Image: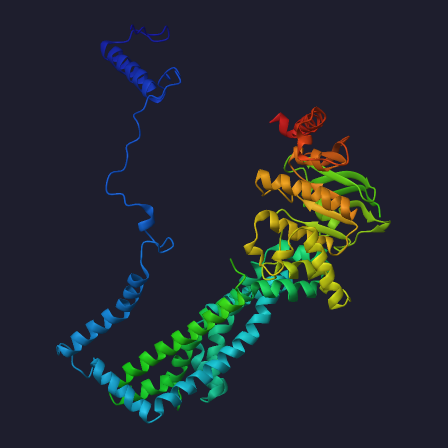
Amino acid sequence: MEIRPGPDRLRPGRVQLALLLSQRITALMSARTVAPVAPPDTGRRTWEPLPRRGGRSRPAWTRGRSGGAGLSLRARWGLRAASILVPLAVWTAVSMAGLVDPAFLPSPPAVLEAFGEMLGTGQLVRDTLASLGRVGAGFGLAVLISVPLGVAMGTSRVALALLEPAVGLLRYMPASAFIPLLIIWLGLGEPSKIAILVLGVVFFNTLMVADAVRRVPGELGQVAATLGARPGEVLRKVTWPYALPAIVDAARINAAAAWNFVVVAELIAAESGLGYRIVRAQRFLQTDKIFAVLIVIGIVGLLIDVALRILRDRLGRWVV
Amino acid sequence: MNLVLSGVAKDYGTTRVLDGIDLSMEPGEFVCVVGASGSGKSTLLSLIAGLSPVSAGSVSLGGVPVQGPGPERGLVFQSGALFPFLTVAQNVAFGLRLLPISRADRERRVRWYLGEVGLSSWADALPRQLSGGQRQRVAIARALACEPAVLLLDEPFGALDVQTKEDMQLFLREVWRDMGTTVLMVTHDVEEAVMLAQRVLVFSCGPGRVAAEVPIVLPAYRALAIKRTSLFLGLRATVEDLVRSHMLSPEREKV
């Protein structure tokens, strides 16, 4: 191609000419790369077939939890047993090998012995009942407060706008941080412990109940209204029964929190309860007792969970 | 009781979804409303059901203005909206339980309606155990048990497979002839509308208006085979063309 200087350029020297030439070429090249001429669409694909992913490919039904079809009942129970027995075996091995001072890590037989001793004196049963009593009172009170609040928030826009900011804020204040304040307000007795439980549970449970109520399909309430139900009847006969299994499920999750808070409350100031027993045992370096109480706390918590799970399944038989 | 709508309009925020709807239904009439999605068909039913207020105009049933939901205007949703925690019989009994009638009377009615929809043997089943068609039968029985003057159906068979849908169409025609209830049904299925209705209203989009009315001049007794007759096919084509021609609003066509 020929490059002619335009009429407005006065006698370009050789350097200038070369410069101009190179600029032109660059411009042409960049023009090519920026806007290539599109190949005519012949209706045929011009690209290679897609590569396939290599590697082993197992049939889908052996993977994941899909129906558990790939896992026999026996294998499942075997794994469940292993989930308890393997940590127990490691614990036994470590403590028996004398790697750790038994004052820090008591052996399983020692823990069992401590357990038997506390059971024999009736101490363990008394402490468990004391803790359960506090959970019953505190958690019960929290449920009594949070369910009506949650139902109100889930059904009424006014209640939602009024309560959600406050509850959402209070929820993030740890209940254990209220302990000093509660001791100042309510003293060292039972009321302050129950108040900790209530504070720890009530806000979470309110929001979860509100959520359960909001998930009731609007069409159900509308149909009920066209069948003659008044708003109160829609609430009692449609919203409440539909939301109940989810509400019990929310309570189940928060019962675990309540069981945690009761132990925390008893660590501070108490004369009975499982948390108190741990503090006592610590004072005398009785780690075997601490271990025994911890295991009891875990098992009782699990039993509460299972009980509420059964209740939920009974109430929610209709759930798909 | 006559269902009369005059100058009904509905706004959602600043958008008018229904405008200038005039409709008068004789007792015992069967009318279908067809139109593209977004033509406000379902909104129309919720206005008549009293689930949301009209923005202009009025809805009245037997001369009494509609001011909220009530059992004289039964509603059936596409989903069926059965109460999942109640058995089939309890679902049908829902509206009756709200009324001061004896238990024996209530049970007799429930049995009768379950028989009418062919689900007597499913009385104690839970909704989740039913097929889609059976659920819609329960929903219809539940609405009918309250003896509504008007039965409002919002795409009741939209989620069913073709064979079940055709069974349900025959079933609905039968129930309608037995009960003599006024039926106003919204559907997007033109064939279904022609099969069922005595007249079909075609809605236009944005805002929804009654664009056309097609009387369905088919015999009162309609078997499935009627769908293959030239008269049926002609009516169906007429309605389909109307739906298509009113599908896009002038504004949208410019884009």
